Length: 101
Image (cartoon, rainbow, N blue to C red; front, side):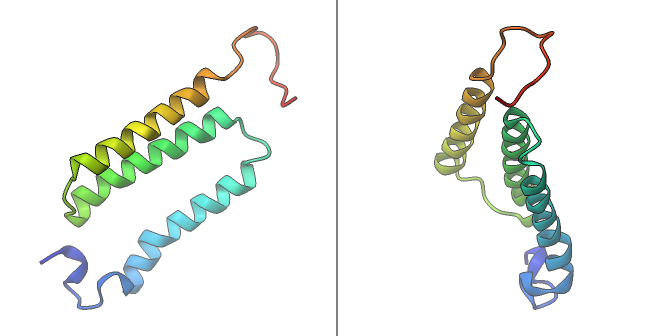
């Protein structure tokens, strides 16, 4: 039997809602708050890393099966999007202070 179904409530138990859904909501609020002030490269890499880690944790902790056709293609698209964001960053003068305009 899966870990989530031992108490009979599944994912609707207080523990799963507080420990699982709470950090997701807090991280989303944090990203919205810092979005005007942060560099898009940092946000793109942290979000893509969080998606890959959450997919890995769902396999390890929740016992989900890895479906290579879908999971590998999604991870590849996330990786390519992150790399394109990083490569589009200006690299002309490292001594020049960062300016959003």
